Image (cartoon, rainbow, N blue to C red; front, side, top):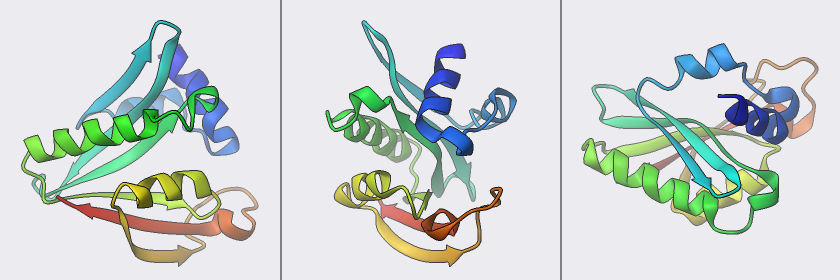
Length: 139
């Protein structure tokens, strides 16, 4: 867990989740991608509506490992897991200011279904930090 928390803090900064909160989010599935150097990335999943839908609760790739295909690899694992559970769709929320994550999801077939301003409860959110974008991928 310490290596996951380091990645969480490095990747999400002031938006990082606490270790106890992350533990509550691992019940429906988690995937940690590692190599010889350690943790490269992870994803936390949650089944919704009798597993017709699986939510990507959190996904991260180490900063120094981004733009190398690891995000796509994690998404491919996630898609296969969802199909194995006979889910009809994957869904997620992405902060409007997280352009790299938005682009990764869009390039992998996720479509925007909703945009809401003021949905993220963060201290003093500004601009795109306040916008919650909901995306889904039909399986």
